[in-house]
Amino acid sequence: MKNWNTTGVWVLALGIITGSSLAAQEKQAEQKQGYQFTLEKRIPATPVEDQHRSGTCWSYATVSFIESELLRTGKGTHDLSEMFFVRQAYLAKAEKYVRMHGTINFAGGGLTHDVFQVWKLAGLVPEAAYDGLRTGDSLPVHGEMNAVLNGYIDQVIKNPNRQLTPVWKEGFEGILNAYLGEVPDRFVYQGITYTPRSFADGLGLDPDDYVMIGSFTHHPFYEDFIIEIPDNWSWGSIQNVPLDEMMQVLDQALENGFSVCWDADVGEKGFDWKSGIALIPSEDIEDLSGLERARWDELSESERNALFYDFSAPKTEKKITQQVRQEAFDNYKTTDDHLMHITGLARDQVGNRFYLVKNSWGTGNHIYDGYMYASEAYMRAKTIFLVVHRDAVPRIIAERLGL
Image 1 (spheres, rainbow, N blue to C red):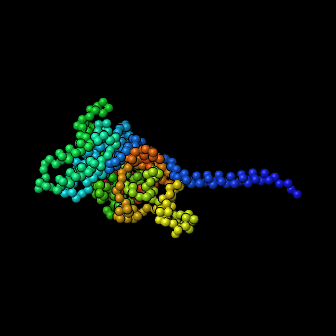
Image 2: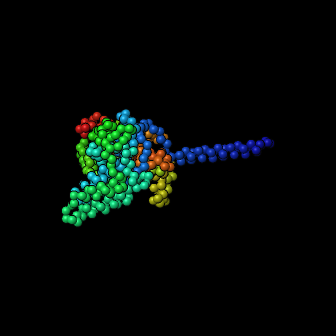
Image 3: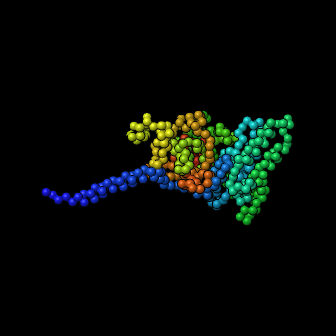
């Protein structure tokens, strides 16, 4: 008869159980770690700003882009005024609205070319010379101002005098001056006195060196067209190229050290600011695990969405073709929501390409300090247009566009 060491058996069994439990916990922790990104390219950028309660992403994104262009060209670090462009564009917007008898969009929104147009006509101003904060708030809060401006301009176009007075613009500017402040004719910056025009000229950039590029099939490729979105009140044009070429412009620009201004739809469920990620998850049940597929018919709609939009691990994304992209634009699933600034390239832990995006929603308690990562599928599907320096456009594409 053998004499068993029962204590040893229990210790061995406990060790096996404990080891299995730890392995399971480690696996579970690994599955819940979420996306892990490795930056491959990061382009210098100025600190993240906060547009707060104002619909001025178009100015913040474009100003950030210009500031990176100044860094790229060796002009140093500058904090430019976003509200200078907002103030100047609002008057031009009012003039167009009146000429169109109120039949175009009149709101706080705009696009990149609105900044470029103000830059060409009026110059640039540093933040230190014009911050647009006249209401006692430390960050922009434009609800009341927008409402007052809308009320004023709508009364003008009602034309109660049966002809417009020559002073309605003065009244409109008076409102802008009350909320944002008067634009300085001269200011001192870094010990030198400038006008907005001389300051812009001294920085050495040319607004005509920048091109807006999109990809849509309802207009011919390699031609420009006025992009049909509500915030394009100034009827600015973009260059039209096939989708793969638009992505080639984006990738080559970033790889060669050029940042990119980005107009996009951010209303998708896959745009998760809290998690700092933007995806177009596949909603094909074949991309789910066997257990998840088996349970599919038992799940509610919210439970199904939770499966597709759970970002605790890299997801299979939808294949975005030219047709898929166009259909989403045509049926309003893709809309012009928000402008941001693309400043880098990255990969997730399984090698998928992502783009580092600088937002203008501040940095407070944010996972990536005001930045986020957008997938290649998201870029292909939800880009309205890109803005790049003409030198960043691949030569063959530039020739096709006549740049």
